[in-house]
Image 1: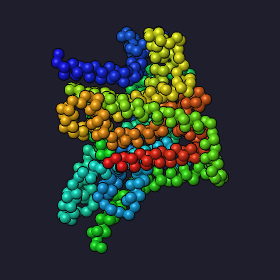
Image 2: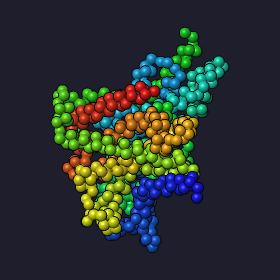
Image 3: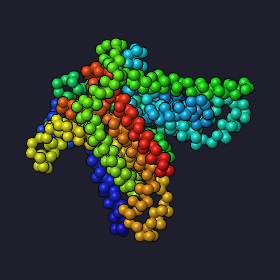
Image 4: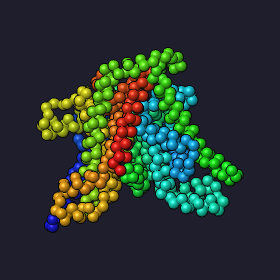
Length: 279
Length: 293
């Protein structure tokens, strides 16, 4: 073995052994969801179930409970609408900020940076007060606009950076042909900024999909809950926590995220790194 | 001014309007309201009856022992998880960067904890660290390091340690991706030159790699510090602040005061302190970032 292959083997060995530690909790979650529910505080606890006790009863339980479909649908609805609204609003903002000078532009930019810095949860008290005033408690519309407001700053920041990389000669050509601002936005910017918009949209989807504190505050009704609230709902409801059910529902709720992640891997990484490398 | 310029101005305004509207209503108004509320006695039950009490809420918060504990917990959490994630993330990035094959595979798998939602990840950790759970069994019955079961989640140190472990575990992937991208921007000629001069791996890291990616390091530092103070769901899911609010962080304590005891004024003052402290800190960090360029 040459020195180079020895080195490669060493690196792979370290990476693989660390990786097994890193993904151990995920594997344990899946393995627990496949054990019979009664055996969950088994002694001795086992990392893997015996082959003959492997069961999908936890999954069947979740599937038979109609309410989890509704929770799933709620999550899809809330995350989907949030992503669409945020994509449009942030693209419009990002485009205007990248291309035009207007009164209050500096203030708007400072405000966007400020909201990126303040932890979202610090605003939960006045936002709750607002939601009560808007009669948005226990209503999915009590989630969506707040999520949109939440994700727009980061999205705008990223899309603005993306629009700046699109040559403005393309805009000029449209204006020369008598096109308007709208024409430039819809015909040039939106199509060309698609990768940037896609990458922030994936993040926005993830954010809305897993959001817990706000949804837990605004939604009480079982059938209006989103998935994270439904999962946390297993606690306090029974004397014993039904871990098998908890993890089966968790696996269900991770599937859409995994799909998005796997199919949009390219955008995912691009979205993470644009801002950071520019510093 | 001709008609066309006028029309374009209107169109720009139309594009800005939805964003500005959403901001003013759902972010700006709450920020202003938060500031106002912090000067009032304002209870959850009587939402619209308030009395102006000046700085009293701020005084109550700062003198509150529970707040002090929660504040220290947030500080410890940030001081430990931020460097831990950055160092481990950077190490993994360096290894993946120098591995010849399976780069994408490693990157995807190491990123899995990041996309796992906080609720789910917290519950898995709670299950593993349960008194009758896997870890205790492993430590006492397999490795024979400990005698009997340790009640991990029943003490301040234990509960915080589990939350910190989760925070670090969940953050490594993000740091890895950010640092991997930064490593691509380091010119390869620098390394070649150093090799000719006989510099070893460690020497190259400190004299070439680290200086070249310092902008990214600072960026990660800003984002992770904010994230550290934003910790909420994991505490709520793993310890619920127990025992006796010993493991609360600033935000879980604020939430408890707001929605369990109904002291909105107190919670508003607390939130305002945290938000402005973080804004100042981030401003300083951004300044440093600009000076370095």
